[in-house]
Amino acid sequence: MIPNMKFYVISIVAIFAALGIGIYIGFTLDTQSFLVEQKDDIVGKLEESFDFLKSENQDLKLTIKEIEAKNDNYKHFIDSTYEEIIKDKLKGKKIAIIETKDDYMYSGIGQILEVAGANVVNVATITDKIMDKGTLKNIYNELNISVENSNLITNAANEIAKSIITGEESILVKKLEESRIMDLVGTIDEPIDYVIIAGGSVKEDRNRITLVDKTIVDVCKDMNKAVIGIEKLKANYSYMEAYKGFKISTVDNVDTTMGKVSLILAMEGRPGHYGIKQTAEELVPNLKLSVLE
Image 1 (cartoon, rainbow, N blue to C red):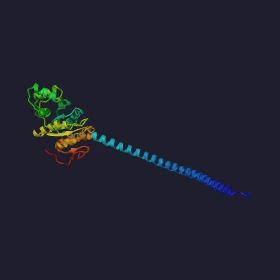
Image 2 (image 1 turned 60 degrees about the horizontal axis):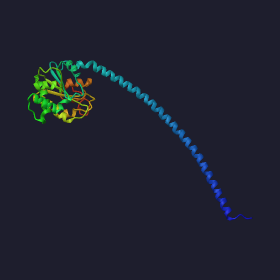
Image 3 (image 1 turned 90 degrees about the horizontal axis):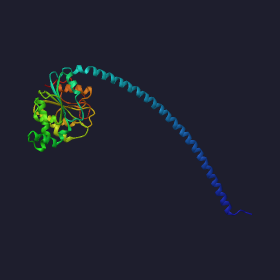
Image 4 (image 1 turned 120 degrees about the horizontal axis):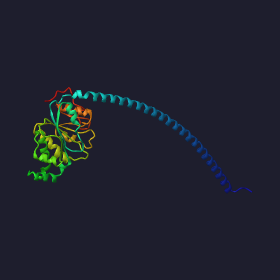
């Protein structure tokens, strides 16, 4: 019996199907072999890169240790010699430090000033209570002092600055101290030559800077008293930009040895903006410049 056409068609299809399956299986086996080879090659290259990075990391660690050792030597040298650099630079000067906010304390600055031959007459800290108009109004009423509501804060700051500069403590300032609007270390009993205004705060308060800090700076200028603005290196909110706007010298890292030296040299007669923050214009004062009287 002769096979019909359907048989031949099925046979041909089966043959081609078998060939296709065979080709697919062969291709798959070749691909798997290729992928394994590629995988091994990639792993090898990764291992080489890892070994290189490991070696480079060790070299960097050694370099860092060398740099740290050099920095320690520099720091030791600075700490051992800076007192000779500033010794007697401010001899006989009477200094007042006014902390315009109580977020950061600057009483430690007194030691470096004394090394420079200066006498820190007092350190005044203005607390947050100065922004309480109700408390201020009660104090003014108690003392029978007439002040417009819009001037309550600026008047208090003005009176504090004047009393400290002249060395004559007014009745209002005594009351402000009793009310803990101002804390005082030292006494207000002699005129001073130089005012250090210490800023920086935990939170931004531009209104306070305008009402308190600017008022104090303006009083110093009106009374022809030198004034310089300072703050610590890691002050959360910096006052340096505002102080530059007040046209006074600044030091933005006064809690570092470098900053302390800059403070003394600037106060000696080298006005400028010193430190490492964006507002600074020079790292330290240039000793080659003539001291301004």
